[in-house]
Image 1: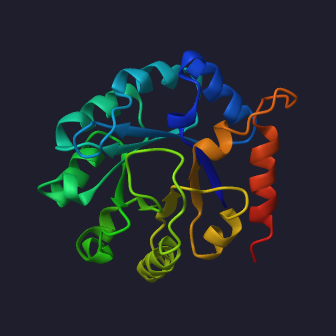
Image 2: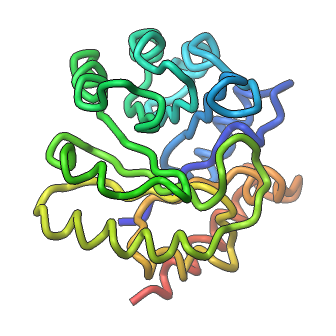
Length: 226
């Protein structure tokens, strides 16, 4: 099963609630939150209050990607605000195992995020505790960047680790995902696809829910994957 996870970073914040409900009605599966602190990454985005505002609008999974440092302090806030999955970067935690434990204690599923230059060796120690692995196919901090091809190799290596573990772990990709490359990314092993500008920048007033065409095009490409 493939999951499409639009990133609200690229949505129209003047009507965010409508953007969320429309993209889900158009066939998206997950709402992806990109949380940046102008410290770990050179940008400042959204906090728990936005998550709390969106939560009553949908039963869909809210997938929170924390690009913040230090990370532990804000995890309980997002859990309380209604997050279902909370992911963080190993570089942002002094004690990765403890941070994963904190996420679980708050009732959320835990994910670990790998930047383009972050080694997968972190998985040697915590794979058995993870529910999601997020491979960044751009350097974090800004939307609209181009896909880094080396991420495909990283996806393949991660998929091998997941399959060997026998555990059900989502393998998510984030950065530069578009209609014209989503099938190739899926063949490399991803099953969950974050897309921001590729979805929210392709809205059509002629679509019943504005984003039906672009999400249908992504589904059509995914259907071609053997």
